[in-house]
Amino acid sequence: MSVNWLFHGLLYMDRTERAFYVLLEGLLFPLTFFAFSAIPDLSWRLLDALILDHTLHWLFNGHLYVVLREFSLSRVEKGHFVRYVRGLRGRIAREKSLLAGAIFGSLSRGELDSSSDLDVRLIRRLGFGNGLRACAFAFFERSRALLHRFPLDVYVLDSLGPLSRMRADESPIILYDPENRLTRTSDQPFHLVGDA
Picture 1 (cartoon, rainbow, N blue to C red):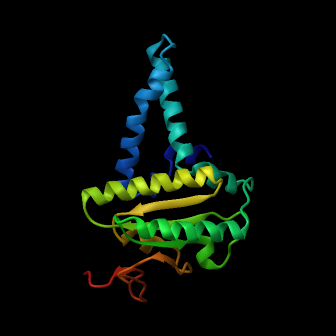
Picture 2: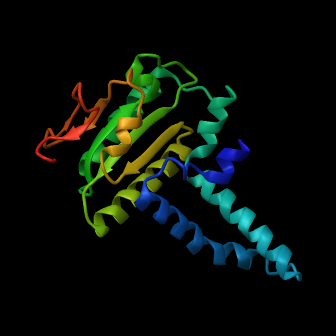
Picture 3: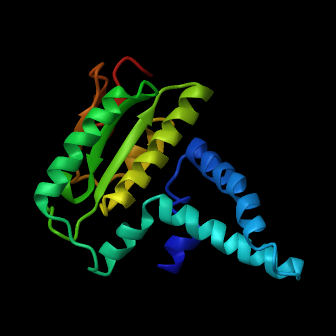
């Protein structure tokens, strides 16, 4: 749990989402620093503000229920998974910054149980604005999952490259691919049709 809190999934994020995440935490820091203004020692004030800032960011990025699931402290009924996936599919379809979205993990392997989380990868469209919007979408989706006590593990990808690192036995469940560009072939795990 401490490693999860420390890194917040930064090791799994692509460059754009990592930058968004660090920027968001930096924007929150002045508020948490102000909250500890009664502490006279500047070093302690900085440390306390950093810890609170980092913890709040960790909580609202949905990591709490993913970690609780690891310790079998969070259980989700299959019906809740189905309802969440249906809602997520609609939200992804309405987000113009996203090119595609797919489910991996235990659900895609047919091993879903009450201690599973939902592993989703979103592929964003090119462009700075699309990168910001896609990352904001993922942040709000993680916050939604927190409020619904749902274990969501979602990341925004800048390209399809990171999908090649997914397990070979995980056949993705496509949530959104309006241009039918996301395909899986035997010689290359994933590629965009029409791209080199």
